Image (tube, rainbow, N blue to C red; front, side, top):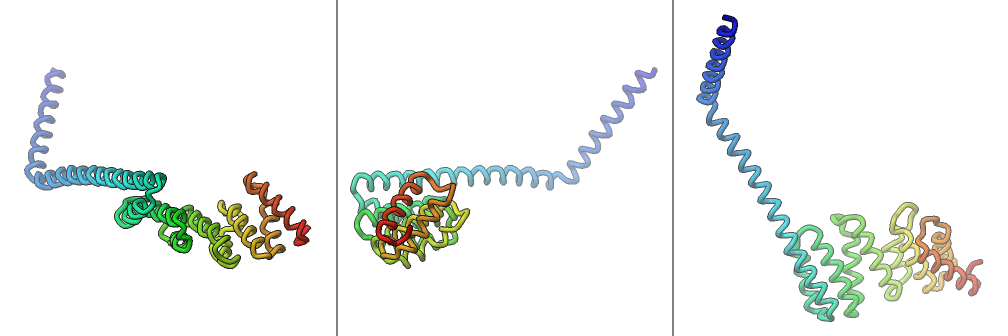
Length: 223
């Protein structure tokens, strides 16, 4: 008898749940359908967006690599045109990478003034990642050593030559060389001394700094 009661109660509960679900569907079916369609649409949209990003980035990457090959092969004019076009139409990080490579091509072509201007422009573009901006400033500074004044070099990279900045070692070296070239031996000795005293300076830069300090001392600029 107890089993019959249990079975009866279970069947009644199932009927009630069935009636409840039917009533719920009847009342809210349009809302439920709209939510389901919305979920499908959003999922499809996200997948479509991901696909678009991947394919667009891949196309930009192909153009970038092709331009690199042309530059390495000596076809600098064609490479420059492709890099400049990628600056306008590229996706992701490729536009700024194209700006940097275009500036390098200009330097290789001997158009140093344009290359300096291009690197300096990237270095001042606050929309770009800090690492990219710092690298651009350093490239401009090293070109300015032979094509500008100590003040020009300082304007590009002295802001980087501070404790804790990852680019400080190269920035100090550029400043030291520029000061030495300008005959400002005391200033040069200060920058090379900072390099020598920094325990995190890479060995190559530290070795060059030691040689420069010896040359400065030989000229009576510092001891």
